[in-house]
Image (cartoon, rainbow, N blue to C red; front, side, top):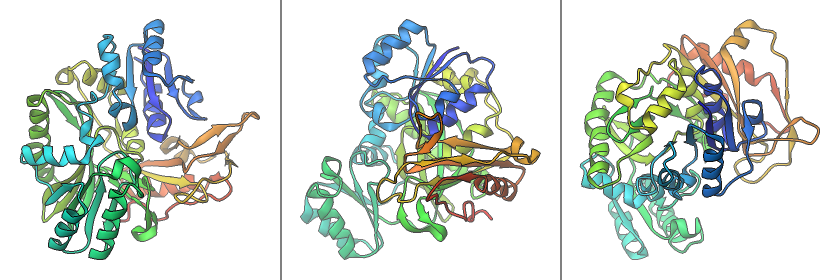
Length: 422
C-alpha cells in the first residue's frame, strides 16, 4: 500500500521510518515533510486539504496518517472522509479533546473520568476567586492550541493571577488564551499513555515518560519535550487496569454517545497520585518525542496498526511490541526555546561500532536540505537520537553514544533523560 503522512516533525519522520521496514508498504509521501524525510519517501509542497485529497485520489494512495494536531482540529479528516478516503485520525468534532481544554475538562467531568478540580472561565474576577481557593502551585491553561506551551504552573497565588490576567487579555497566547482553565496542582509522577483507537476498540501502547523542561534535573523553561523513554517501570498492571476501566473505556463510550466516535491516537497525560491515575489532559495525536521511542518498539507491521484503526477493524489486528526499551534524546538548536537560531550544518560521524549501528538511529525534525545537498539545523528541536536496549540503562547509554556522533554549531541537549527510572 502507498501511504501519505501529514506533518514535518520528528514524529512524522519516525512513523515514516517504521513504515520503511514494512513489506506491505510501497511508496511513502510526506506533506510537507522535512529536509530528511526525502530519504524515506517523497515530500509534497501541498497544504490545502482538498488539494491533498485530490493528490490521494489521483495517485491511488491507500492510507493517510495525520501527525500533528492543527490539521486534525481544522478538519482534514472530515474533508477526506467526505470523499471516501481512508485516513487515520479523529474528526474535527472529536479533535476538540485537544483543540479546547475547556471542552476536554467538561467532557471528563460529564463521564466521571478522574481529573483535577478546576474551573473554566473568561472572567478575571472568577479566576482570582478560584485561585484563592487553591494551594500553590496552581495550574493555568489557555483553552486553545498553543503548540504545547499553553500550560503554566504558577508557584504562587500572585503568579497565577498575573498569568490568568495575561492570558485573558490576549497578551500571552492571543485568541487561544481568552478563555482559560484553572486547576489544582497534582503532586505525583507524570506519564504519557497512548491508545490507538478505531471508534470502539483500542490498543494501548507501552507507557512512556517525557522530559518537558529544557535543563537537567527538570529545571529551566518548558519545551515541546527534550527526550523520553518507553516503556516506563513506573506503570504496573494495576495502573494499566485502572486506566482501562476508569479512563479509556468511559472516554470511548462517551465520545460515541455524544456522536463523535474517536478514531486515531488518544494521548493521555496522566499524573499518578498515590497509585491512582488522574487525567491532566488529552491530546489527539502521538506525542513528540514519545512517538520516536514507541515506533521502534512496534514488532508487528506499522501499516496494520494505522490501517486497521482507520477502517474500524482493530479487533482483527495482532499488534505486538518488542520486549525492549527505547530512550530518545532531543538535540536542540542554540537559542531554543527562546528564539530562532541561525542555520547550522549537521555533521554526523560515521558509525563503526556494530552495537551502535544495530541499536541506534536518528529521527530528524527541525532540519532543511541546503542547495548543496547537506542537512542544516533550522528548527528548535533538530533531531532525536534513539537508543534501544534490553534495559533502560543500556538503551540510554546507546542513545548518548549516538549523541556524541552528531555535531552542529550551538547544539544543546539534556544529559539525564530517563533519570526517573534509573
